[in-house]
Image (spheres, rainbow, N blue to C red):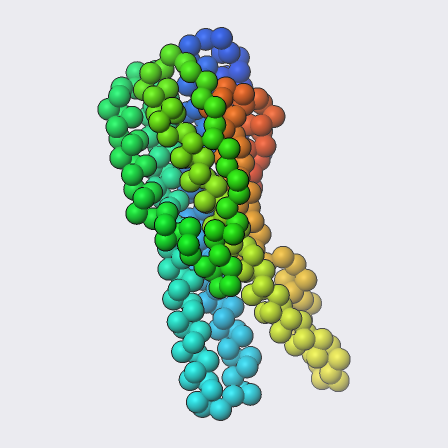
Length: 288
């Protein structure tokens, strides 16, 4: 377990030890908020990598087909690709913007978990939430290639808020917990859409490279020095697909944990699952 995950686990263990004390749930919310901040930070790296990967994949496919096209066909092919790539990069920017608003909300949630939190922090959280209205319609209706984000949005059950004595956080949860659950579902859907489209792109690219690898081996000429090294990535799940899958899974686990936490039903097993998914996306992001 990485240092960040160990820290969260230690904080949650402390919150369990303090069960029955007035600060127990506040500690749990603070730990959850820190996990959410870690997720949103790592997911920004995933988005950047996804943007690089989509351009590199498209370029490789264009280069492979170039010799079979005349000048007019080449011009049309690259012009069409540029248009589609710009659209996809704009969607990735939307996902990044949505993630940054989520991060700001998690930071507000961490502040609200302070026993001395005032209603002014709740007002700040409301202001952060208002920023979603500028992003959500475009992201919900966005398409990544042939894949629509909306088709991946799961059914969201509104959290049942267990009332407690921390007034600022209690008021915030009653006001917006159902909406935040929907925002986490939108994050999950966006990364699921990325993963789905990249699986299609990656398969096309892998087929091209695998054919080249087979032809090189079958040929009577000497194999390239890196033939065996290059072969492994051809048979493995591309990093971009794995990272988008990990981000979608972590967002789903955040929503599940948030719903349970709001209802005061998040146990150590549920928190361990969350920290495992957060640690996974963090590890992938650091690898990128």
